[in-house]
Length: 392
Image (tube, rainbow, N blue to C red; front, side, top):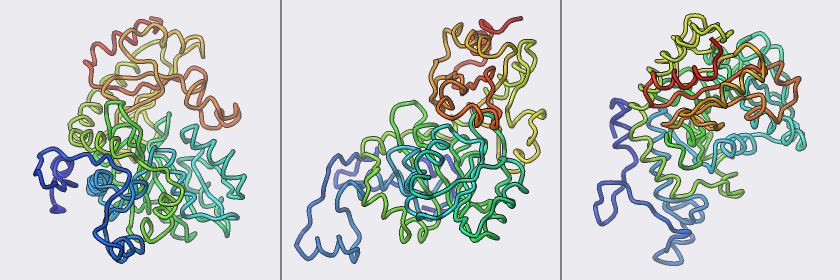
């Protein structure tokens, strides 16, 4: 497939390997194992001397197709698909790091990621220092002789903070460490971290890549030697946080419409964000496409649009925030995002409810904060739905 094709074309035509039936839509290979022509071929496949499918824990044609399509969109040499976004982060860390290594991470991360770094990895003597998502000097100051990995989300969840990927790439290179960027909020349609200097990109394919809230999936993307010759694929092959063929097929089909969906999510989100800024009961709106956003200029450089996530703070704390949620009739009350249907959640008691109050305070997650993942519905209908719980 040509490298100069546009994203919407790559999302439709990359990763197609037709069977003997010459099907138009990609086939789904629901099989646990694959048959060899001889004992010699089996030995060659297992040793890596001959390419080909072996066992669906680590080789499956449908999963391969999904990996090829996402890699083409991200501009990556290779992709390792996993069972979820969190398993992608786990595979990345466990595949590359060892006991005694050190991570620097933004404190503005998804709650489960914070819990993984603080409650699980530290049990294996992999320590994490959390720093500001936006203060490059804090990242530099946190570097130690055993620092091996810098990890961030940009935009962050839920406050949509924007980290300077190019600047952090320079910090990582100076420290002889890898820079890993979670690109879930933007997708490769809006942002290409590898082009900005990241070594690896993480995706929760559960979100926008699927786009309809149907299945779980994750991926790690980057250079082939880091993914395939390094430890990430080896960890997947041995430990088995595997993406199923069915889920890979659903995500494949979801990516076909990724460009047009992201365009619509962004157009609707900026309209909702501007409307929220005008509401008297809203104290602040966080959206990278607004000129009021602290990193607005940086977002314009790194992203092609603001994305589909709008976070806002209502006056009156938790009681006022819950009133907005409980008065909606159209928007789904769920912590997922990236769905065609709009979703609304209270981060302090859901996505970030398992981290400490101190960590929430440091990340700026207040009791009055709400995150809306703007879907494909009419913006007018979404405004009317949110207005039911907002005090005039």
